[in-house]
Structures are given as C-alpha cells and as structure tokens.
Amino acid sequence: MAEKGRVCVTGAGGYIASWVVKLLLSKGYIVHGTVRDPSDEKNAHLKKLEKASENLKLFKADLLEYEALCSAFEGCDGVFHTASPVPPTTVANPEVELMEPAVKGTLNVLKACAEAKVKRVVVVSSGAAVDMNPRWPKGKVKDEACWSDKEYCRATKNWYCLSKTEAESAAFEYAQTSGLDVVTVCPTLVLGPILQSTINASSLVLIKILKGTVLTLYPIY
Figure 1 (cartoon, rainbow, N blue to C red):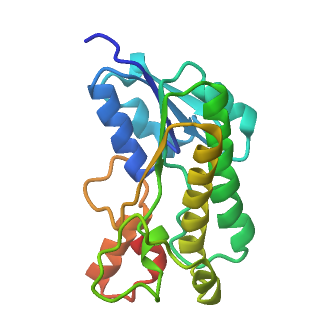
Figure 2: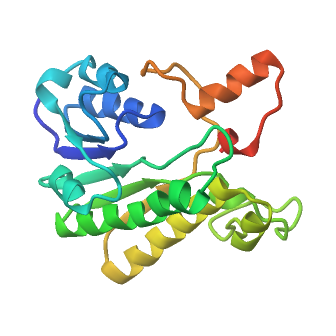
C-alpha cells in the first residue's frame, strides 16, 4: 500500500489516540506519535500494532515542550491533538495539573503546527466544553453556539470542564488569527475495547457502574 501521507497523533498512548494510530496505520499513513516516554511499558501496545514496525515513530514530547512538538510535527500533513489530562478524580492543583497543559499545551501544539506548515489540525475537545451551561434553554439542541459557562465551571469546581472549554476556545481564537485550518470534535463518554494495558478514565466509568459506586463528572466527559 502506497504511503498516503504523514500524520502525528499527540498523546498517542491514550485510549482514543491509540485507536486513531491503529486506523491511520491500517490506511497506509506514516504516523508520528508523541508520548512522555517511548520506552514506558504503557506504550508497548503501540509498537505491536500492524505496520507499526515500519510506519510508526514515537517521539518523546510533553505538551509544554515546544521544541519537542516541533520535531514531532516536522514533515506532517495533519495532526490529531488528543493529548490532555483527564483525571479520574479531583485534583489538588487544577491550574497546574489541568489548565496549563490543556490550554498552553494546545496553543503550543497549534503554534508548532503552523511553523511546520501542517495542513489541518483536529483538536479532540470534549462534551465537557459544551454541556456545563445552566442558562441554555431547556430542550434546545446544543450546537456550536453552546459553550460551557466558564464562571459556572469555576464556581462548581468542574476544573476538567473548564480546562476543555478554555482549550477549545483558545484553539479557535488562534485559528482565526493565524489562518491555521483547525477543526474540533467533542466526544462524551467513549467506551469499547482498549488497546493499552492501563485503565483509562472512560473504562473506569464502566468499572464503577459494574461495582455500583458513585460516578463523578470527571470521567464522564
């Protein structure tokens, strides 16, 4: 199969990202994947994917490391930005643990994409950036005009929802000023077979359901 192009997936070891990597490889793409540590066992499943040995290259990169992102995006036609912290529980320092990597990390990704002349960036946002809006009319379909209320998220300590809202709005603002082709998707709860060996936040929801324990908002989105 002829190479279709070169695409990067940030946070390649994550649940959605792993399936994106698998699909891209199966379609004949050369895939760059960013992970915090390529040698970490939790990323071993990526190297076992079909065509991974010849068409997958893992890059050591953190969302706050701009130069590392530039290296990963070099030569790529497209980027799937899936990397963002998804805490299974509450966090002690939301500004550092959630807000900075989500918002500044997204902007770093977009700036690096612009520098690398990437043709299109797909930012994986979340239903969390849409749903937390108590003023939205009851029964009205939530569309592109509906955003989670940032002040409401802060007041209710829904830090994950705030981080995704801030990150997506920042992405669109950057796209408008830079001309970079940016689109977003807003998945909610994603369930299905997992490729990695570790439990992700979505699977944790299913485990909690099976155990009959109380759910929190964090894993749902």
